[in-house]
Length: 478
Image (cartoon, rainbow, N blue to C red; front, side):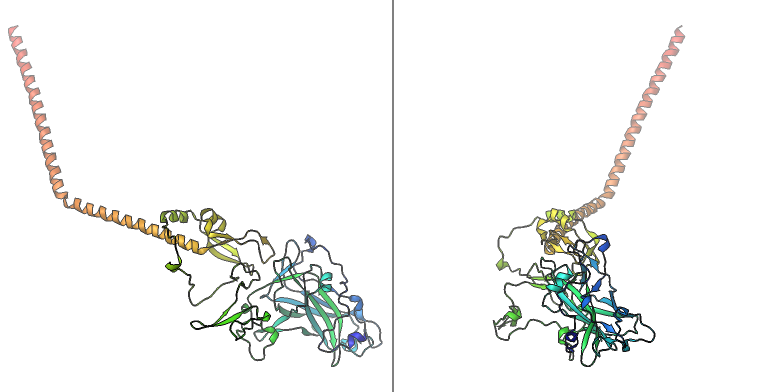
């Protein structure tokens, strides 16, 4: 016990030998099962056999009457294969901690103490630590944890500050603690994927010593994906009094031209007489909100700029000019389908409304506009193989050609319409003479018809009269 009680105040007093496994067995295979599909962080006792006894004023062991209860009030996404919990750095998570006691009315925490010491349970604290490991088993993670430190942050006065020690009272039924992770887990989406595990201890303290009474460790491996710190930390620059660990340090740039060192990520400076001081890096890729940039600059999120995007287009750096059949471009644009849909954000996992085309359909029509970027891991842990991206500049050029083809068709239609209008005007000028001519022809035709009718009628009439005369003559002769 003296080993625990002699720790200085600056140290985190855990029971000795953290390399022992947890008291509850952990599955060696993290293949998720229906009964193992918890969406919360689950805590189990750590080295329970090393917890110091708690005694009353009669030195009777009352350890079984006092225990720390800690649980997580945040639901996480769960990886379908490994059961890994998935969290986002910019989102907070909630821990609920409480100290339960089942003591007689004449007993209180003030009368309890750690055995073989004068340390009472008057002042209790909850101390939190985070360890990082590549193991999916907490027992292995405790034995082979990384030396990289991970701070937990809490928001105070609209800014995030590191927090490790939280006062806790037996009078509180439950204490709600809202926390953020300082950074994401390392090597997200790779074979060396790292995971976080939380360690929580109930600690008794006084002016000279501190002792961890009970310690719990989270069983579930937790993957924390990166996010934009500006989305939850409004501080644009370090302020006086801010904690150094709450501010992400940026690469240090040496003022000497062309200088570099291992600590500044190979950034260099150069004094250009036309451009001023230039900050540059050779043969490197830059990732913003991503640890796996596929291009010279890969950004997960929106880009806001007050200027323009400029692309080299000088005729002196181009050759082999060939004309483009704009009618074919118009046909390709007609063949494309435009959709309204919801797309999953690759960083946050949220579904956002969007209008656009489908890369697989576009590839059938314009293969040069689609690029396959390999495998992409979604925030929920799902891996998409042969992830397709769209070169929107190709689409823009295709739209320009299609618009030009439509403009030519509209111009031809205007010429035809003008020709028809001119022809109609000419016909309109000749209409009176045409009407007179038609009327005259009709009159002549009518006269001819009447004349023919009169001739036929007279011929028939004369023939009838002749027949009557012949008949009369024959009668007279008889």
